[in-house]
View 1 (cartoon, rainbow, N blue to C red):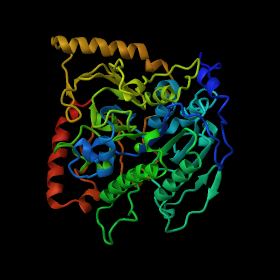
View 2 (view 1 turned 180 degrees about the vertical axis):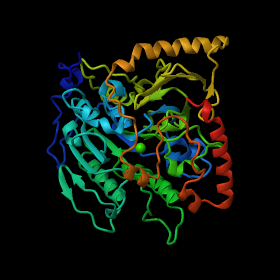
View 3 (view 1 turned 135 degrees about the horizontal axis):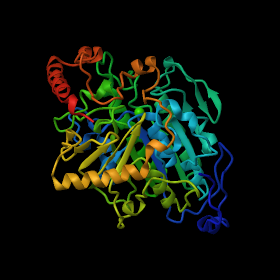
View 4 (view 1 turned 45 degrees about the horizontal axis):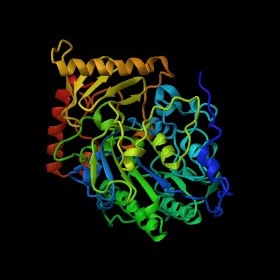
Length: 492
Ligand SMILES: [Ca+2]
């Protein structure tokens, strides 16, 4: 049986008690809280952004100079795994727990998350004197950010909101806000963040920054040139610009040296962008919504100047449960008692200390799951895959293999899945589809959940791809898709 509640007797909170004024009134400037070497933390959660959207990950078609600079100022992780879909991914990050424990195994089962059963990051950090804000998307998650411990929030309804013409309401701390027809919602979100940081610069803060970019509907940006035919690339550039502005504004406020920025993608690239989200000339295996690498293998950058090693690239395994214990440790906050936290703290590594690395990560969506080690992957059905050429190729291993390394990997990952025992957890029967059919059309996602990235008997190119790609790009993509179809029978 699980119960929740923050531990009492927290020593750092007691130490701070004489100097801290915690939970300042909303919309006001907070009093000074001793920082004691603890960083502000900004968790930048881009939407539907895979490694093929980011320059420093080897993207062939997208340049992201500001995000690349962020990576140079810190550590770039090459093996970070989210859930393959927005809602389960966010729930996993905010609770530090796997979907079968919280019940958020798909976008449709967010109502299973209740403050009585789950503790999210802001509640934990507040116990250590942090002031907290959520910005942007809160879709699929239940209630309002304030119900989960955020002191302030600015949120929109739905996913990928850029302009008022898309419809859906926007709220600031529970109150509906009017948006002008020429106001760009991502810029308004950025403005909220700058205002929040300015008012709280003397107190450690945590910001959950759930960007609109690059979730569909892909529309023009304020920087799109008249007649632009490539809004997707325009949006990729704008996402990069916003990350650069965040860094600049932290510098202007004198907060950069005190701030850890984590940049991640919430799941892999969606179908509308995956054709061009190739890495070093190769398409990834799968995309958003699939149980393949392209579904959950996402970019992750951690930068805290002077603390995280600059220019470092790490292949240590990370999954989305790891952020909660990492942030708690950096904040000096105690984890909730009586709740199984699945994450492993990255804090020692971020501070240049030794850490026992994860031996496996776990991914779950809509009643499917797998565990993956550095070189191998075992799925729910007991199929083992050689992942030495991932994220491009996932090579099935024969059931009667005699390869000793493969046999040892199967044994290890079998033990992991037996121990987790997700089948005995909160399984709703939901399939893990992304929203309703209209939302999926808007997203240009046509999200698939059952295995292969390309289903036989479907046109090789989408209408959007036929309209926006050059003849050469279309030819190349057709060839890639044909190859993927041929390999589809071997996919997990
Ligand atoms: Ca997403």
